[in-house]
Length: 306
Image 1 (cartoon, rainbow, N blue to C red):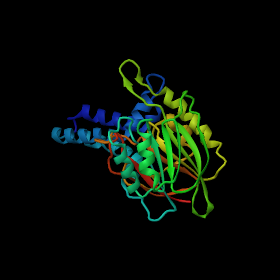
Image 2: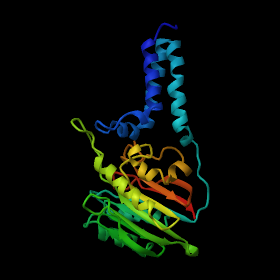
Image 3: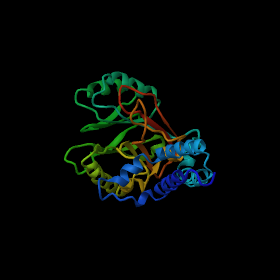
Image 4: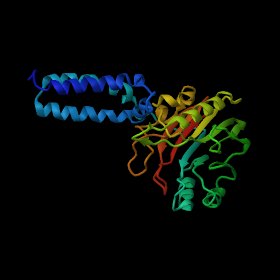
């Protein structure tokens, strides 16, 4: 029993070490560290597979070795399995990459109105679809601003609207001040960081996204307001070290007040949380995903206390 399954035991230990030391996997070649961290929670499935094989092999050695990856995974992600959502909140926000190829922008706008959000951010808004979003959202959200392919719609007044330079040569981010009830001002950023791809010859092509994340982080760090909310498609997860210029100074609403991982992409089989709601100076109360629309992303929402 103890001599069987030595290979399985070694694989279990290696899996545990990979999760434990994920930050030491270098990004110097193909951004492998960031790629690993994007799908880091899914390494838990490796432990499940090894458990089944260890039971079939009747290997006590492999079962003991599996304690390492199970404990490491639970330490990293166990807290996300609990429901941390509260009730109430002063402001409800939502963000949605509506997909440039969305066949039903009017229907998507209708779904977002039904979400009950006070503030809605959209990414990947094309010139052709913009009139449908403006028409569909106008009744509930009388205040809005659009910069390039991103937009912000609000029930409450917007001031100080301006583009945020991501250093990529075209406009995919903006910043505006939302004046919430009671005169409380919140700086709201909407951002769509450059897309990433996995290529055989180049690895994880995330360099442009990483540079944009640094530019966005600098803008947020210099924001004059105490209360700041970031909404958008960051094409990266909270685990990805390359988003540290942003994630190091903001809280994830999903991580602080959600239930589960809140994967948002792709909509048909969500595998990663790349659509983010982050806060600074405000407290997330609850966070959740909305039903699928005509987009390849799920919309996500959160309630925050000002």
